[in-house]
Length: 256
Length: 256
Image (spheres, each protein chain N blue to C red):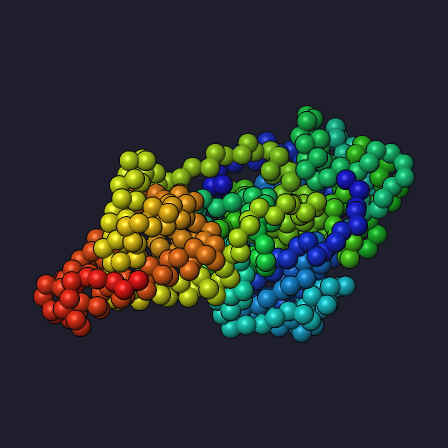
């Protein structure tokens, strides 16, 4: 899947962090946001600063995301102008809709207009019931049972990646090299048969059966036209090498 | 999607980091591996230690993954016993198959048996062509154009998450034939090199570059153990044919 030019205006999703504690997480979050074309970072009563040296260090080339971060005292202010709000949760909740997966959450957010908010809780506790009340839907990242607590920046990264995937149509997979026509492939197989008979690898009465194994192998390889030419070059050289000494009684010294 | 009980035995994927530089990244990687039921971490000539205090700090409850990390000097050793090897790449490559997405890579890995390896390059450079030659497929995480360089631990997290999603429920086994371990494949490539040098198809000073084309071709074919044996039989016969007449001055009459 080749990288393509992407217009960030398509993604109008705001990442909202409630009371984040770690400056390094902040920087890592800024970086992964920029990786996936997100630029709006809002911090609700943060316990660390986007100007912290550790945040800038982890952001690397995403310093602009840190610098543009909006700081507000309450979650209500952070989502006031948003038409769709998703909150991340780790707990199984007994009320409300079942949580969406990151992919489903991305689709749900993408189905709306205006500004959307993706809300994450603090590192040590996740969003409270009161905070989740601002969220129309919740997203839960499925994890293994052995260790379900994700690092905050990892959680944002996984959700941001899902948003990115949902927002661009999958590009077609294209081969840059021309593929051989069947006629060329058949020519190769015929050449292969001659070469293997000549060196005594194949016996005439068992040739077809053994050749089938080679055909399956090379068919599976989806040989390009260049590779067919490459292999035929080897077959020619094998032919040369096996006759060369018969005639001249010289040590093997090719002239290519 | 509610969290479910998950049996980690289904995932037999080894995370291989080539020359990782940051101890904090190491710890973050250990943590996200455990989040997604991965436990085998291999480090190839690492520039940081899993015993580093910063690594342990970032790993939080995944100290066991760090403690179990295997350290080897070469990538070849890290993947020798693996039947499927995927390498991550950021560059657009002009040769070889187009890279897979993380989801496609997870499906491809899951379709095999035995141990699989997921290979990541160092923070500052990614995998070299030589290192990618060990990989039968590549995975590229699609990112925005503005900032395409992901933090190493983020990249592992996204790939690990895709593996986790793909692995439940466990996919049906599709190959009935045993797959060769990388060590056996490498033995074949070494034999191929010797044989092609002997018949004069390869010249010593251009051998490596030309061999890469053969490696890509045969890696793409997903050779079974039987096919490796088949091809080595051909190479042995080529060797026989090219020396036979030099010694005996007889017409080509094999004794098999």
